[in-house]
Image (cartoon, rainbow, N blue to C red):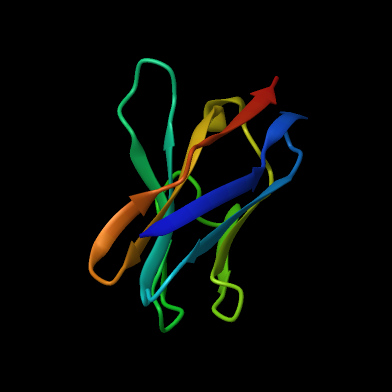
Length: 115
C-alpha cells in the first residue's frame, strides 16, 4: 500500500507562481510513473503533467511552457512548479503515482488563481 501526501497550492493572482509537492510512502513499493491531474468545478479530471521513472515528461497543451514537473526518486516525491498562472488553472490538483503496477491518488489540493 502507498500513501500520498500533497502539499502546496493556495490562492495566487494571475501571472503568479505556485509549487506543489507529493510525497509517497509505504512499504515494499517500486514507483514507476508519477503525475499531476486537476479537476475544475463542473469539469472532468484531466491530466496536467506526467513523468516516467526515467525522467521523460509530458504536459497538457494548456500548461506546456508554464508548468514543470520533476521528481526526486530518493525522496519518492514529485513536484509541480506552476508559473504564469491563469484563472483557468483554478482547480483541485491531484497527484497520481503508479507503484508496483497499481495506481494511487493524493487527497487533492486547491489551487485558485484570481484575475
